[in-house]
Length: 239
Image (cartoon, rainbow, N blue to C red):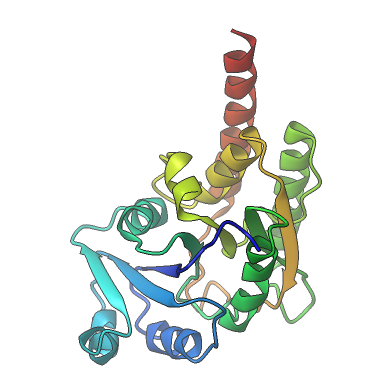
């Protein structure tokens, strides 16, 4: 087995997800996990009353809630989750219903069996699973760029489903406030020599009309973040 991991924390960052938050948590709580699991919702200053829909889950102790009174971005919400997590393994699940939490037990297994310390749930895109050609192309190009920079073969670095020891999440010291956290985490994992184990997962993208928030500028930011990490790491090794 792996390093004796005893508890998993699932961090769910939330910002104005009233339409989907309750359903996302109900789906997650229905999954039989291979480890005792803490569900940690980090609200990033929501104003749409979405927390009212899960008040009973919080009161019953099935979900733990931490709140940031001012919206700071997904990266800031995740950093709060990393800091507050009780589990020694940690993964992320968005509240938008794009990812099926039934994938999580499969993602945990390579770590529990000592095959790796980092697992990504990678998406396969079909007509039903992607809201635009440019979204899919951008994701593939980002994965290719990361693979080239760090001499690894990766197929999906922007996936939400990333699983690793909580100490590793904290140790990479991510700074991004927004969606750039996905590229930053990946770059820093790779710069540390971590080998990312990829597991196929099911995925159903939502459209802009349904609340998709990511923009093309986030892709450009991700390219810059990966490049900066790669060459800063090279300079630090050469000193």
